[in-house]
Length: 336
Image (cartoon, rainbow, N blue to C red):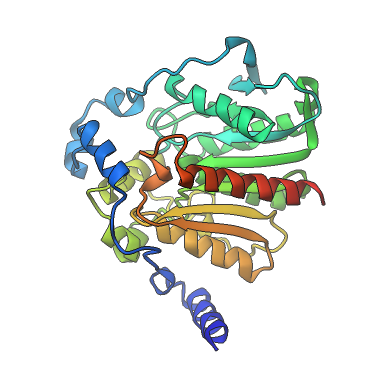
């Protein structure tokens, strides 16, 4: 009976585009004490959209992230395609014929691939036994939509054709996106379907997906209202990011991938959401739409956590659970 009720509610949501009906807190509205301590340690304070607009853009574009060392011989730095897109290639094991993860970093479509992110990319290569191609796509406000989409898609096509030269197995490609990068990974997958090359992508991994970038969604989604401020990723920051990135383009499926009509035939997906993330319901609704069209989804909403699972120590059980979920999805998707 419960399953039947869920199916009825799901079809109502899909028919009327009402993400709020799918909203769930996935917890008891208790912020993880480790995350609360992290936010206090970094001196986190909410900012209004007016304050964000008045900040020097460099302060947002180049966040002060710690530089964690890793073996420099484990990375190659190249530029690809006619646009000279910078790509970092991480191979922590120096293996051959390894799965390929194409990584699209976060940063609100504003931050480039800053050095402070490199250790996590190297760690992904080590954790998943894969070669990680990290795409340093162009960002706003200097390069508005569709620059980042074009770079992300053209990099995917190039890597899918040339990845074997760097020790990768081009028959086992996963796209991994975090925050804004999750949006780009979803868009790249949809574009690949339109061009008839989606079979090159065996898995999409979306963590903290901004699926609907419209102001309407930000004012009606339950998770945007519940988590509008206080938890690092805010509604104001989301507004600010998309107004710099793609003003007036919010209904374009290459900006808001959730508005696409046809999800049939897309590759399976890992979709990670967090209880205290304004973007939580975007991820939940995207997962529901994929499932409606028969796409396999491994979904997890992490109770007590914030956007991107930020603030957790590397050995946290939640991080290990996330990694295990991705490993299982990779194993299943690559075996087909």
